[in-house]
Length: 184
Image (cartoon, rainbow, N blue to C red):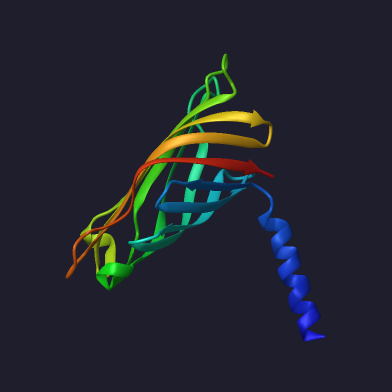
């Protein structure tokens, strides 16, 4: 009976999880998966993500942003907040936590409302890094096309880097990528 109740609880949680969007982007060496849930009643967003590089390791995060329309015409959406990120630089033997702060901007022109330009930047200096980590940077630039109401295809550039105390810097991604966003 306990297993049935546990499975029902997980099932109900999964129904709630499928409420917003899933973003998947990749290139030849790395991929990133991000789930975002938006609390529309108070403009809060939570997200969780996993990035994996075939040679350099992985980084996972959970984040909280305050997001809202940033202009009268609703063309521009902005968000400010932070993340708790864990990085595991496989080749370096170093790992650590960081609390990068930053935000994002998404611009969708009303006249061409199927196209969106996006930018996100999160940075954690030494004072916001723990363990072997001394800095963490995550920058993304993208151009998306709305294929259907609930799906975007995009091309972008991404720069994700972790710096460590006793090892060389680890680049989790530094280049172009393609991907899609599914909205539920």
